Image (cartoon, rainbow, N blue to C red; front, side):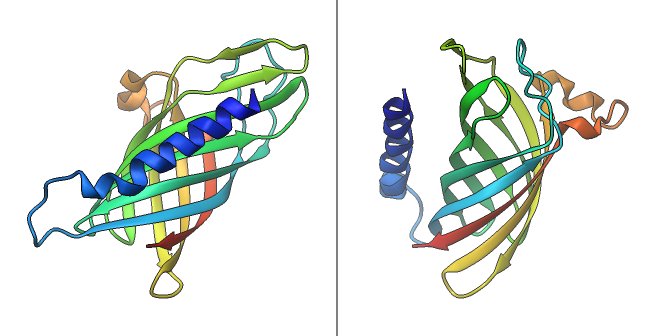
Length: 180
């Protein structure tokens, strides 16, 4: 099963890295590509049915970002949750659409693959998230991103974020990006 996730991650990288060559943009358009690695701190993960995995925990992620004209960003990544309680691991491909340069906001979708210690495995339903962050340049080609995510079980829940805010749905992350 780990080979399938490696292949999925490799597919994301191989599709998105040359993707800027496939876009038909005017000569004045700027497309930046970056690769990033980092970690997320989850306050809780209580939406996984049938597991005891609902404590604060860390996950790790790696991904590719395409930024268009310094403002619009597509971020494709894979998040990995190591063994915890009754779970062997969780792998979660995710896709974010963001707006902004050094301060950005957006939304995304993810789908978790859960491998249990009992040998069972399953794909969870898609979940959605709101994302806000800050990109701090470290050098000409490197940046540090600090993110906050708010998880949503259904995208229609976006209208209830203010009235039904729940700290258990918060995740904080930090990633190091290298721009090519």
